[in-house]
Image (cartoon, rainbow over all chains, first blue to last red; front, side, top):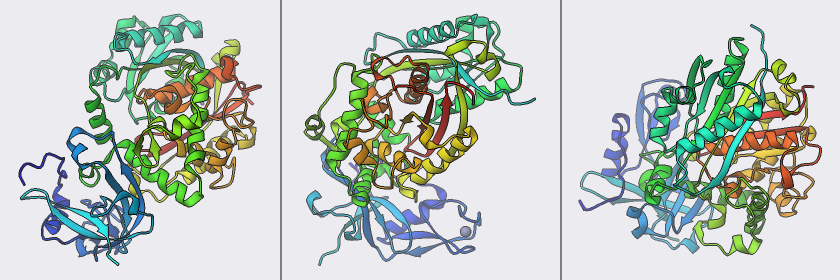
Length: 137
Length: 393
Ligand SMILES: [Zn+2]
């Protein structure tokens, strides 16, 4: 797994818990204990109220496709082997929107509003990336 | 000190090309000298140089930031320099900083230049630059997103919500290329394309096809600006800034509630128009720098030119291109002109000046007295809207 050549997330001190979570195959969302908002992506301070009293909640892992785009070319060389790449923005019931790739499906099967669920891929010994796949009927 | 107001009185520009033989400094010197000569002033009356930060041009950024331009050009009256960087909205900020110098009463003329050469940069490096510069390094970049991918996501949703078809959106590119085909400064001069050309071009990031994505190119331009009172003495060459408004949304597209920027276009244009004492229906020309076709539609919806979701139809009916009754984006946008990084916004201002002066050749909008222009930076992080007129009301 150490031959992973694609860019890894540039982890910040205040996002470490998110990536510790994915490593345990849990999708954690930052939560402000002062104003009760869910925050994505993780920040040092709550962007709504500037509180530093921040915690984490575990997401259900379910989501809906808000939009998607199938990339066929124009990527950096290190991504070429993955083409076509299905980019998507997905809406979580926890009230946040994430950028991801849709996996375990064909481009022609994807549609806006499609129900998806998180799936974890351990891309290196240290890093696990969350992806999403269609919920099986 | 009372406000003196701003007018553009000199312009210079080189054709957009891909030609690495033409150096960054060759372009820079040519456009600056042309703009000063066009203004008809002595070079030593330039009191400040406010440069547009050229993206992906680190050497040039250093030269511009650290005072090389007035030194090399012998601008003996120059009191200070600065560089503005807000991506594609950089030129807008150059104008605002220039206006502050002019309002101070201590500077009468400001030179605003831009230069970019991208044809000598390896394609993979450019892909890397434009993939990493505006994107989140943690939550976007690891997923293989590109600028085209990011805009493909928004375009797909735009089609879903409005019912706009791929053909209607392709018509935007046909019209932008039609403007470009009539413009000697466009890389596509003399090269119009058909709807079939767009629809049959390679798919890059659905629904965006190759002809709807940007061709990175080289170019440059410059403006000389001054106060309204001085401009009035300079005759027909002056174009006046009548109103201005801006809105910021977000750096990262996925965090945007105003996903098509309609609200941002609406509010920034309302601020600019009310300052100018004019309505959107007084505008003879709408210049929209969005770099991707959906923005040409959602901007018209935000401005209030049409109902939400009807923008693409106006383009598909031919009303926004050459010969149409709602001429838009005669500059061609990046799609119809060639993408010169932050220089696209410079080219938009220069084209607006030409239209208001009646110097736009085959693209000339008849009786063009007022124009509205919106620039944006990053992945459409903001909308910076300005109303220009050929006279002060
Ligand atoms: Zn909070």
